[in-house]
View 1 (cartoon, rainbow, N blue to C red):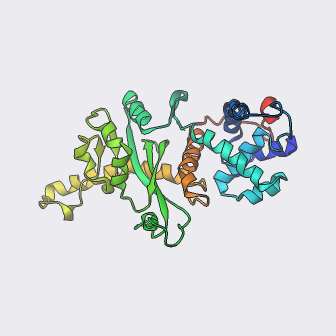
View 2 (cartoon, rainbow, N blue to C red; view 1 turned 60 degrees about the vertical axis):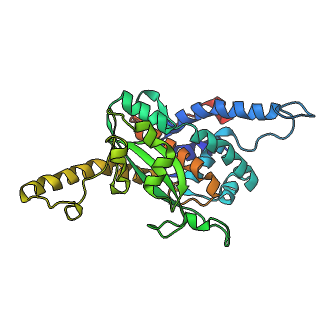
View 3 (tube, rainbow, N blue to C red; view 1 turned 180 degrees about the vertical axis):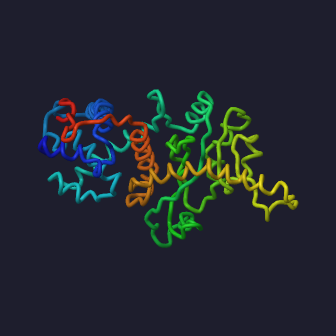
Length: 323
């Protein structure tokens, strides 16, 4: 691909979902890792010819990265991307399978250049920087399993009435992503998903943590010694009638919890701007990797400083990464 065409694709945020400066940092960060893995793969097998002999790459690293970003952002098929780059579909598929794991391993960005990759990292970060966080689960529509296959009903979500996979989402008090992952079949209850992820054991007895959750997580509040906080029950479901003089305070407490917890819904909404966490068109086994990759990219864009640039100024990609 010509350099001018590549620069035009990189500068258009509608295609990649990332600003040019975030994309430039991403190229500098991932290019050495991709090159190291590629060289290790070449040296890891018996060879007849020396390394470097044979056909050359038809897609440079930047083109591979751009194709993966467009795939995650818009769900464009591999055939369309192959036609755009003038290569075979298998070339695009191989490129995406090389770049997507690198994006998934980055994790979610927080202050100070730190990245959170696991729930243990999230708990450690929230304990080191005391702040309120929120957790919830989101359903991602997936392809229906083949008929008469065992376990097919596990993917039917009772809330969505569709075949889905459920991902756990943790955000900070401002709605910025801290963790996305721990995917489970859509029929699994939110409470079961959290317990199977190991989060309960990580936050149990931690007085310095405060995770806000909705009523679907009732039961975790006492199990985690109030590290996870759920809303107070409605007045109609309380065991004893609420006195008129305390009814206003009861509703105010419920409203305050809902107002603080709604930030996780905002974080999920930003995540759903990427097509991969909204409706996954590929194999179900690759959803967890695609969701984590999209979450890392979304968090990088959320944390970006977005410096002002002059109108018409283009992004200059590193020369060693464009080759």
